[in-house]
Length: 468
Ligand code: 4AD
Ligand code: MG
Image (tube, rainbow, N blue to C red; front, side):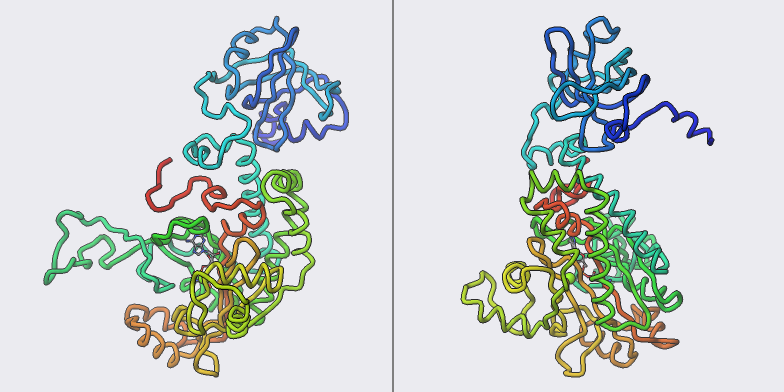
């Protein structure tokens, strides 16, 4: 046994204890009190250690040493309890812990902000530092952790290489001008050259920012390892205060050499279905909680997705459907305009009633790297739309032809010299390749039914908000 295992031998997680087959003479747990109810003869404490949604009922008799102090603290205190695990006479729970010893490790008092059983999400956002101790956030962050593991496992099983793409970069991959600047220059007194800031004198000798996507570097790795993926933090200075956008979020970006758009869609479908199936199998208790409290019908929706054939529709067909929707949208529908969230939701929720790939968008509304289709007007792009969330994945086949790519960059106003290293991948050993990006928080919103992206990321960063 390792030294660590030995130290931990007598420490139990509440999740394992609640699942015990039989009572136990000696059990030690540590956790935080969720409720403290003083009865006539004994006090009942609901103790939670984050290992599962359920709390363990602890029974305290008044002659225990820290008894008075624990009762005085109430909710939010930290305890260590040693005692016997016995069948509980109370309804709704199998076990309770009859304490022989209780130690108050950390006090609490009536000012502890999470006193009520239910607080609004808005209130809990103002308590970002404490909200992991609320039931709903316990469930969210357990699902988040489990899914993170499942994602790495999905790619490992399929032979994809995991690559860490850089966080600081000079390129704005998506070309949307949403990069956060990274600089060590003195903002009040920057070095100037002919009236403009002289970025050559900045830390990296050029203008740099936080990555908006690891794709371009991911493509370079796919040109050596064929199948790769990255899973990292992504930053966008998008000043849109919506429930689906964060300034810092996590994106999973696979890239496959020797693949076209159809193969890209097939991977995305396999990926999403596998993750949903994993969540249903491994996060059952938490999903049941979301099903009951957050999104009625959630479990049915996820089970249906795990079985569903994903529908595919071209952008042109989607526009046609929207024009014939027989309803007015806030944003106009016209070939050449980007789909807005209301359009995406109409298509996935009302036209197909499930996941939908929209493909072959007009080249004018998509990034420079997407492969030009033979019609000269559209690119081999795909977005995967799902009910409630809208776009969850964006991807494409990449333009692998050097001359076409160079022309495209010039048309988009990108200096080919600034991306000469990217163009080199088309100069030597270029091949058809494709990939996509899944927004991890969008996936979690879909899996949990949580409606605001701020509530599925531990410490949200949005316009005006980077506290905690
Ligand atoms: O569609 P996007 O912008 O695609 C890319 O960045 C490509 N370079 C990906 C690739 O092909 N490798 O972003 C991909 C996904 C979106 O579908 C969405 O789920 C998520 O990232 N996303 C955001 N999530 C939260 N907050 C934001 N501000 C997001 N912007 C995009
Ligand atoms: Mg997109």
